[in-house]
Length: 343
Image (cartoon, rainbow, N blue to C red):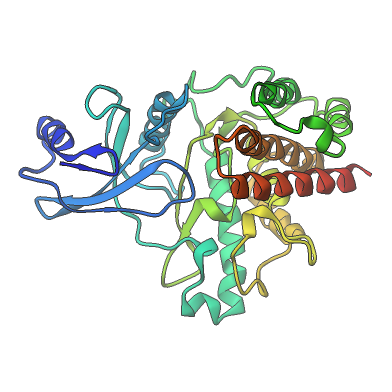
């Protein structure tokens, strides 16, 4: 039996070898998520599980991404970073056609799909939601990645120096998609890149980064404004944790200006401002925040280029046009924000 591209019998046989229950997988249901990855919840021997695997049409790095996600979740087990509990991982792609892992279900909700009555009815709880969001990455950035066995998980040497060229190459690669309108459609892409190269911090303190940290990639507890878990660890690596804080700034509403990370979160009144987020982070880190604007601009640059990839694929008929148009508009907004910040 197959559900959402997952061979349940094959998973059950693999679980037998891991000593994870017995008998068939029951009550299998596909969970909605913010990514194209597949999340399948089921139970076995009375215990609930969530299976995570790449989308049916694998990209070149899909399996390695799953293995990396599982590795970092295993490493941060027992820390004070809210995260899904890893149960077991299967890096062998032949079992179901892709690498996958099993994790504990999260008792929580994502705020971009709607706030429950408790949160929708309290500005104080919404304020707490913003503060706990900062506490999540502060706790993550404070971890000693070497002590957690993550030596070699990323390449911290020259991490900041590589960023602009790395993402410029990604943008250039979209030329392979027929019909893509090209970088000329993105205002200030060269100006932002030049500013980033000219103002790059001279040094940084390496640590674990989530890599795509915003409201769509966390879940909150039902009974408070605290985080239940940070999810979607696809871009995690060893780098500069201040980029996670810059990512929050890039995706946070600015006055009346909406931002991609907060889309769908209503009501917004009560949430902290971006400046409040930074001030809440400051006493929770040993890192120098004097160049934080650089990280926020880099986040706009990087995220904008990542989202433009879907637009490029849509131009070539490989992604829905409506999705491509929406994400292209977001890319333009991110670069306009970066241009305002650099003056």
